Image (cartoon, rainbow, N blue to C red; front, side):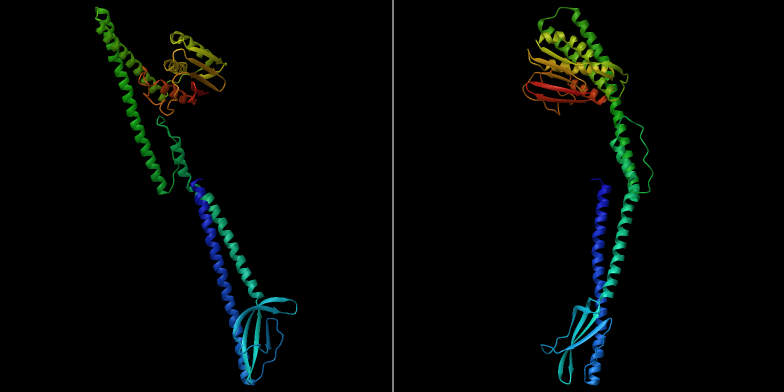
Length: 414
């Protein structure tokens, strides 16, 4: 759930609970005040009855009234306990809720029970009016708070969402970014400044690493070329012993691997920085057929059985990158295959799948695409699948691995 929605929900829920509790307390207080007022009115009438009896030595006459009733009766028990009660008030039309006072009255040594009753209809109507007004104010307040949270606070949070969007779209190679809208909130301004400072540091370190990689790769080209040339000259100069020939052969192979590694690193830098941009419409079926033909001798050397299920599929990409992508996956399928193993190439409108037999254990899905990850017996650079994955990411293809015995399955979702 979003922060704004969580805040809005908590704020409204807290407001409703507090107002409801406050409203109930308010209702009880108003009821208590009005009840106390009725009790005081009953006490005034009580004092008048007592004064009349004291002066006249008889009970006062009882008259019908619209708001008060007084009755006298002989008590079942004596003495009568004075108390306030909730009772009913009987008018000419109907029975109404009322408030009463029971009191003892002594007339010439005889005890009587006097009951004074007053109607509470007007009091309850007043309480209902007050409670209705209170509920109306509560609903109005909740509505105002809802719209304030939804519109005003939403505008206040726009800067935060803009910063969040900027972070989610952050690209270390993109130096043009949208400006964050100005805001008067100090915390958002501080957050924006921190994001800008972090972006600047990351880009600076990236540029330094990029320059170092490019310079190192280019600087290696010259000494590698010189060593390779010297080795060619040395091999042609004189006859060597068997041991010397083996050493020269090992040295020659090592230089060749170093040359391939340097070439792969340069290519990886170009792909990551989007320096290979020229694109054409490519018939993927034809290119796969051409690449398989170039590997024919390697298939024969390991006696690999190759089966094809190819549909015609056109994509728009760079020829050079797609050739490298196919070469890396196919060479990987050959290099890590068993003698007399199988390779399957399946192309349809949605995906390209290359399957190969090999070890009976699944590879580590997280490690196989990591740079310089390779088996101890492999003679590759450890960048083949890394470059293949980087090319796929460059064209927003999904490159994945799965093991379905006996086949290792490399799939590209086009």
